[in-house]
Image (cartoon, rainbow, N blue to C red):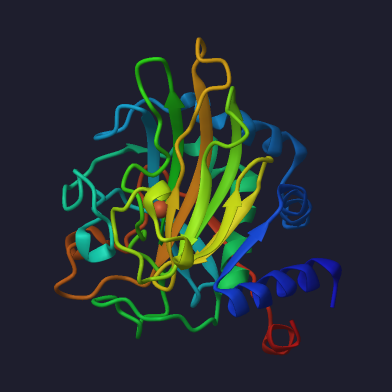
Length: 300
Ligand code: FE
């Protein structure tokens, strides 16, 4: 087994065991480099969020999204056509815009053709492929495909605006596997934007500081470039603390990628009309996937 394979197998086995995994950025950089990320593209990823423009519902956030499909038959991940986005209370997501159809700016080639981003897709697939998880209602677990919504998000705190990386409080993302990868921040205090992982008994919508300490399974904080957290999204809820500015006279920013991956939806799901498997016609992207073989998985 080569060192890349054994490293990913180790992360996979801890993810399978704990239902969450935190991979320090330094280790992620080595992994994505081994998966083909160039130094130039790693540098570009640091600043890609500067090109974000707007968010449909949150004033302290700028967001782009894109839909990607993992196709194990073809062993490829590809960009899928644009569809609106919705999270509802059925997804354990309680917020003023829950159930609302949201139209985000689209992720462009500056991000999707970045070799480091592409390596993150390959990494995520190698970690979760073949893993059994608690099923969500109304998803099609007979399908071998996966739909991954990628969000590139910048949260900003200014004198007038408080940035909440998760305004919704305790929630789930409505998917099977959530992966968040930190890109960077400016003027952020040490205690900002801590992620808490809660048992499923915690109440949706509760603010992070009002949660039951007995139901907190773990906490993690994204501090270094490419710090990455994986969560089995229907087995653990999460919340994130507020973004505070170290120097209150200047804006604080925090940039993140979120990879929300689930099986395609079945009939009766609120996203049934927004789950097209068709490739994107004007922003195509295709990357070859890898997988750990059976023996490596069990050995890991
Ligand atoms: Fe979330």
